[in-house]
Image (cartoon, rainbow, N blue to C red; front, side, top):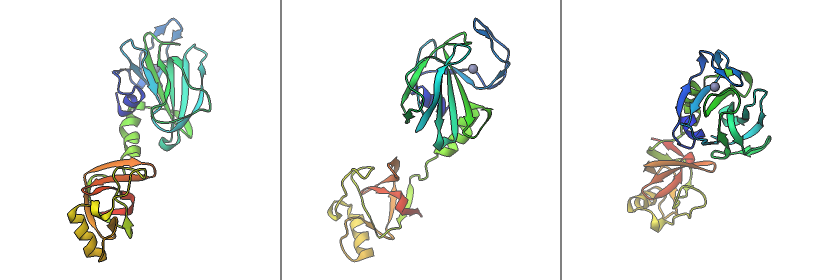
Length: 234
Ligand SMILES: [Zn+2]
């Protein structure tokens, strides 16, 4: 199990039943499996679990393979990979469809060469090549690609006035000077000589929590939420 398989199953219980790599051939009613396993198998304890997209992407193709397996190929440009969901009981997307994180793709099944209900997950780089190890990719590449740009800590404002909002996003109201903490008010007055509705350049603050929304990464500070993209770490 990995971060990626957890996202695919929406946190529902599953387990690796056959890892990527060399393995013993299995005889199924649809024929023998290959000796090299080009993906990871995740068993779902007999349940036809829903499978979800893990990021913004596009359905490259879906259908029924020659061996009878129902499948979906989805590409994720931000992750530079495409993923094959195989042995599906059914799929609910169509070729060319845009998906985002959490879009339902289909349900786990045992179509094709399978002896039980499971997902065979295959991953390839967007540029092609052979299948790579899904669990290793999740541990290494996925972790790196999705690591947040910012983390809690101390920051300094890098722009003339930085709005302080009631929540993490531009849809939340900007707080006026009087709604900021006493400590922020005195820092603002000291740095700019007047009451400004927001953090001013050079003001330092502590960020306790980080949340991306829209094109900014928001940090929770004692006075409210600010876009950390306009700040530098100190
Ligand atoms: Zn497999």
